[in-house]
Image (cartoon, rainbow, N blue to C red; front, top):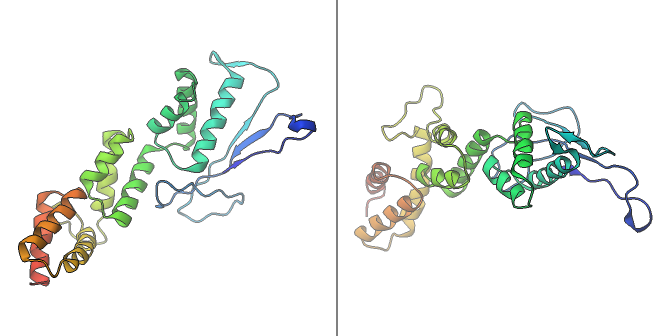
Length: 238
C-alpha cells in the first residue's frame, strides 16, 4: 500500500516535501493479479513478511552514483505505485518503468534496491503464480512455464517453482513416475472426471478426444494424459 499525503494550500500547492511509504507485502498464494495486503501493526502470522520502505523527497537536488536524487525518487515512487496494485516480476517492472522514459541506469538502480529489500522476488512470484494457476485453472507444468518465461522469470526460478507445486510430496507419500505427487495427480483426476462426465452422451472415442484436448491445452504431457484417460475409463466405464 502506498500512503499518499494530501496537498495543502491554495490551488493544491504542496508546501512540504511528501513522504511516500510502502508499508508491507504479504506472502501468500493469492492470484498473481491481486495487490499485496498492507498492514501497519507489528503482529503477523508466520506466513507473513513485512517490509517497510520510506521515501522522502529532499529539498535539494543532489546526486546518487551520478543519478539525480529527485529523478531517483520519482522512479521509486512510480515503482511503489505499480507494486501497490499487483505483483510484478523484475523484467515486467523494468519494462514498465522504462516505458515511462526513465533512463535504464536509474531504473536498474531502483530495481537493485528493491530486490535487496525483498520487494521484488522472482522466485516467490513464480511459485505463487504457479500454485494459483494450478489450483484455480488446472494449468499444467508446460503452460505455466511458458507463461513465466514470457514474464521474464529466469529458467532456474521457473523450474524450481513448478517442482515445488507439482512435486510437493506430503509426509511419506511417494512421487509418481510422471513427476507429480499423488496429491497433484488426485487433484488433476478430480478435475478431469468432471469433464469426462459432462461428455457422457458422446461416443467413447469422442469422449477420449475431448479429454485429450482438455489436458493438452492446459499443458500436460502425453504420459500424464494417457494415465488420466486410463483411470477415467476404469472408474467411469461407458
